[in-house]
Image (tube, rainbow, N blue to C red; front, side):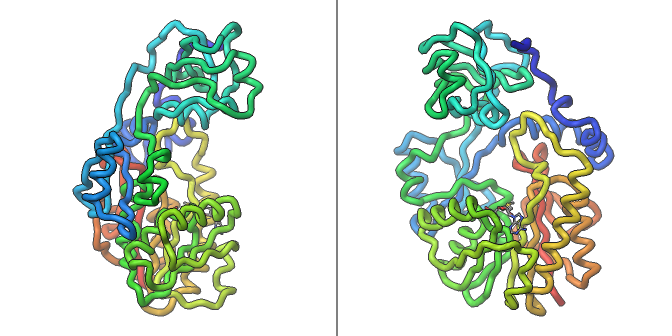
Length: 389
Ligand code: SAM
């Protein structure tokens, strides 16, 4: 089994991507990469105003044992403070080791238990009840806990908790078991992601199309802002994600959304002329936190930016004259963000100011909104609003 050496934040990014960040962000690059490696400092949820109010939900959450805080920017925003780090990267607790895959490691890192399917290896001799350390595949300590299974069982089992985590590196609140969650009183959504529906300024008379909708965070927010009135068409190509979205819309009590499974690049074939389109584009997701390590490179950025232009072309064709396109991504690259906005402007769209502005201005484009993980303590995110004139 490997040494518990871990690796630095710097090493968690491929060399080409590090160079790319240094070119783009200069001296800020290091801080950005440090932040990306940790969970967000403030973990946000959106109050479902179709069912409750912020003050009522906050009271319920307090009774459920949590410490909710009011967002200063969004009247439907509530957040919880992250706990941790609970130990340093080079801490060696001297315990038997369990190695988890990347996905499971990222969950443990934020406070979840380790489930058996996520276990890659376990030291011989681990017995139920033993205190163990959990490492990611590259040897970084992500948490400490108590084994619920023996070494062999946790490797072969396909279900069940393998290690109950008692000291994760960071701790975010676990919300999905709460009654308030089951009753659909809130939706876990990052702060920048909540800004998007406001920037769209939806109203109930409009036909609104969400071109990359699943699992429904922004669609359900639009429904909430239009009081379940108006017509929203939500498209996604992934059946699994649409199934999840259907359940979420039901939980939240959203009623004015029609789900369509299709490739959005073919949207013009539906012959619709929308008043507003949201394109929350599939992207390289470089802004998502936490990331134990990143595998994307500048090549992926170029390919993804090109892919996104197909969606942009389809959106422009399906928008009525005078209609509004809101374009957002959860990534940091300039190619997928400002460069694609310039492409839209070349195609005749006019860039507009945004009614809610919490982030920073864009790179060379004043009206667009960028969120930086180190400056705004959020996910990395981008929002632009354009009009077809
Ligand atoms: N807007 C969603 C929300 O707020 O919950 C998140 C959307 S996620 C950033 C991008 C989505 O694009 C994914 O659900 C993915 O399945 C979908 N997607 C990717 N390629 C697509 C395509 N060609 N047509 C339709 N949807 C696509």
